[in-house]
Length: 248
Ligand code: G
Ligand code: G
Ligand code: NA
Ligand code: MN
Image (cartoon, rainbow, N blue to C red):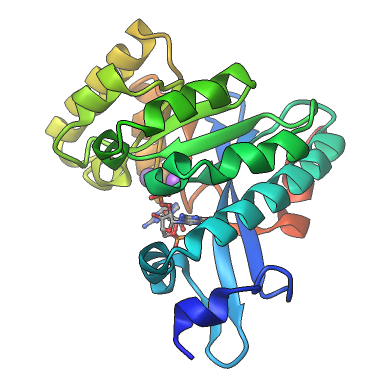
């Protein structure tokens, strides 16, 4: 059987896992939220990263089942994080535009949402190609879910995405961070996106912080929220819970 076929029922069989990567308040050094990143413990091939199966899952349509599983798991884990932290810790999931249009997640959220969990949907600007996704995103917002524009700055229509998609949070792609601190252009770009985000009153998350020199430069540029291997790698829930505990 091919991979997408084998993915069917993988959630129920316990083969899917979510790892969580903290999104950190750079001034306070405190975990503000976490991003869920899926892994597949394949029976014979070992632990698979999303790049190894998400594209095929999207083509075959099994991605809807997978995304529904991710939402349920993330909401349950979000409640555990909230309990461990004693405060709001948001939980972000990555959502393909096509899944939004098919309406899978709204149904799932109808029986799955919880007061104590601040859910964030991460979408990319490719969502622009699915205009029917816009009312779905607006409906999520009405239900208290926030929308993050992921990989900002890498596509060909980043500003159009900001103009046309209902977005609450901007996540600047890690390509910009990679050029820090050596390339002054990267600093100018990040500073400008920071001004744009604050003018629009939307939090900015800078992704891909790998080095202490990059972190220092981002702090100097006034960036508030960051994500990256230097701050924390994606890890199973049990390893992330201690990171949100009071006094951590
Ligand atoms: O975790 P990693 O860096 O390998 O993730 C690679 C890509 O897979 C990223 O673009 C990420 O957005 C995507 N991805 C991670 N988890 C999920 C998921 O649960 N659903 C979907 N559709 N994409 C995911
Ligand atoms: O497309 P998206 O932003 O959802 O991709 C998230 C992916 O980025 C995850 O697979 C995660 O493992 C990866 N990632 C997270 N932090 C870093 C980092 O500091 N450096 C690199 N190279 N990748 C990262
Ligand atoms: Na993401
Ligand atoms: Mn990204």
